[in-house]
Each structure stands twice: as C-alpha cells, then as structure tokens.
Length: 344
Image (cartoon, rainbow, N blue to C red; front, side):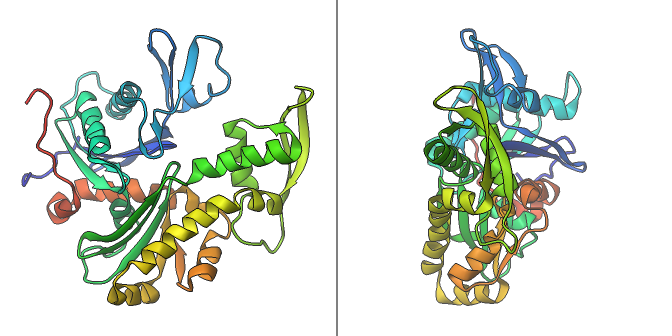
C-alpha cells in the first residue's frame, strides 16, 4: 500500500445517476449516466451510459434499459460489473492495458455486504486492487475542505440515490447520516404530483427535466412557469399543462423536509467544539442536489448556519477521490483498505 499509484490508476464515483472516472495525471476522463441496456432473456449488453439512457422508456419488448445502482448501492451486480468494465475500457481506449488500482466511492451508510459487492464488482471489472472511500469524505476533499485539520467541517452531499451528511475532523468522519432520499426521490415526487393533480403521466426523464427547470427549495423572487408534456391518464393521448415553480416546490416539500431533518439531526449529534467550528466555517453543499434553486437559502433559514455551495458540486466526489490517487501517501488514511482479492 505504501508504493505510489501508477499513471493508469483511477478513481470512480459510482453514482446512482451518473458514473464519473478520474485517471491519475489526466483528471476526469468520463462522466456518463449509470444506465445499461440489455436483452431481457440473454442479458447481453447492448449499450452503456449515454446511449443506454436514451433508451429508457423507449425500448421494444425483449430489451430493457436499467439503472444497476439504486439508493447508492448495487441492485444488479452483473450489470454494474459490465458497466464498470465498459467505462474502464473506454477511458483506456486500448485493447490491452495494465490492471489499474481503483478508488471507488460508496455512501457512508452502506452495509459490509454492500461494500463487499462494490469491491467485488471492481475486481471483476479488471482491477488489480480496490480501495473504498466514503462519499462524504471524498466530497469534502473535492470541495477543498481541510479534512486533516483539528477543526469541524460539515458536508451535505445530495446525489441521485442518497443524501450524505457528515462532520469531518482530523481525517475522519465524526458524525455521519446517510438517508436514501435524494435526486431520484424528488423526481418520483414530481411524477406522483403530476399524476394526482393533473392526471398526467410523466416519464423519469421528463420529471428530471421539470426538477431542473422549475425545482426550488425556497420562494423565488420571480416564480417560474413552463409547459409540461405527458400522457393524459384518461384519454391516453399526449397533453401539455402549464406548471409553476411554486407547484413543484409543494410537490417535493416532503422529500426536502427529510433532507433538512438529516442535517438537523447530524448537527444535534455533533460535539459542541466542532459545532462551533461549523458555525464559523459553514455547511458545504455538494452533489447534483446542491444545484436545486434556493436550497442553500432554505438550509440557512432552517439551521441558522452559513451555507455554501461547492465550486463544482457535480464533480466534488470524483475530484476528492481523484486527489487520493494523486496524493496517495498523504491521503491514504481516509481510504478503507481491503486485502481481499478474487481467487486469493
């Protein structure tokens, strides 16, 4: 473990919504949806990533487009392994390459069995050695927080499947909470709202677009409106309805409340000295959910703490993991080492 990483080694943010790959010395080389399209019967892989995402909700009988990770953990092991193998090969663009060492991110709340499945997928995909880093730690490093100092840093990482809340000090997670309410749950809440209030069926992709276009966590100075197209539940025909940002805010209120509660609970469990540090330094938001309009303002209002959005919230986790392969000696204490190897 002491010898340094070689150039082909990489860090992987294996996310529910997107997978990002960082290659040592080259930076982020891949950012694609975590989606696999396959034959339902033979399970032969037809497409991975962006090409597969386009197929969601549009596949004929016999072909299925799936997201192999749910709530931040592996739901379909074979599909995850194939996807990881495909992305590693895509980054190398060579038929033969040295087996890389991988640093893979996992949510802080995963069970040992779920963590083992991630490592196994890494080995199956061709890794020589797999290291695990917990997402809030990776997010904090990627956001530029001084994780090794004796001061409290709080990070809230809102991804697709999970929201990770953590207080970090001296290179370790002091208090953590992982809730399986994040971007995907917001999409599902929008689908349920449109069905109930407008008798309109939306696909996952459309719901995500609505969230990005109209979603907000706090009243806006100028509320937004947009025409939303879906399928009428009565006639079965396409229909368009006008929807406002105020309405979408109501639709996702319950899920937002869960995320805010997780932040409050973590603050309640934080030692007083570290809570004082957080009051000075503030809470840092990372992940795709950090881009939701007014979320920083809402958290500021609800907790009384300063809240900042990371400079590049979508890439914080992969950049933090990438820093571990770039500065392995300095940052190895934040990794969860694993000696297990296939066939060993």
